[in-house]
Amino acid sequence: HIQAFAKGAEDFAFNTKLSDRVNQWQAKLAPILEEEERRAAFDIHRYSEDLLESARQGLQRIKRKSDGSEHAATTTVEFDSVTKGCTQSDVCRLFLASLSLANSGNIRIIDEDRSTYIFDLVSSSVERPMETYRAPSLAEQA
Image 1 (tube, rainbow, N blue to C red):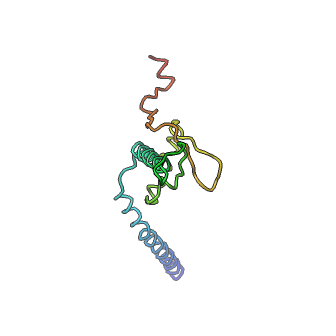
Image 2: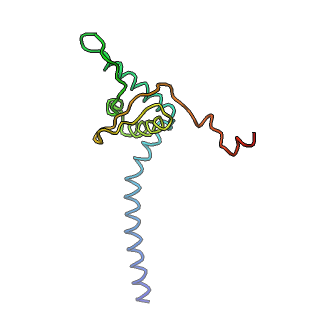
Image 3: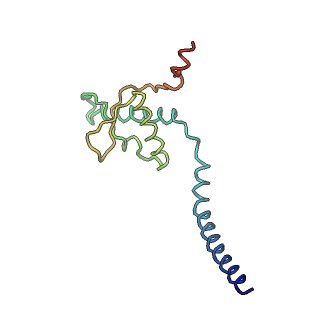
């Protein structure tokens, strides 16, 4: 009986510690999940359009000098300038959108300086290649 009691006490102590750790984890995670639920659903096309619009506006500001004269047009944009004032989650979403835009040919990532993320605006219209994509196996059937 003493061994059974000792085993039961040991199990209880282990389960209590485990329960405490699970409760601490849940208390830490609950606010994070609640905040995520309040955010809008991720729409990569909307974020792509937002990124391109911010880039166009940034380029317009760069294009004009303080004296009002215009100088040579540049198409190079720093990612930091596009995401200024964004929340951390929106920066992540915009980064993913930029990778999608690079994949579809709207922007070209410039690999000069690895300390900043710079891209070249190639096309300002959002391409949606997955909407018109037909798998080769389906194309053969047509």
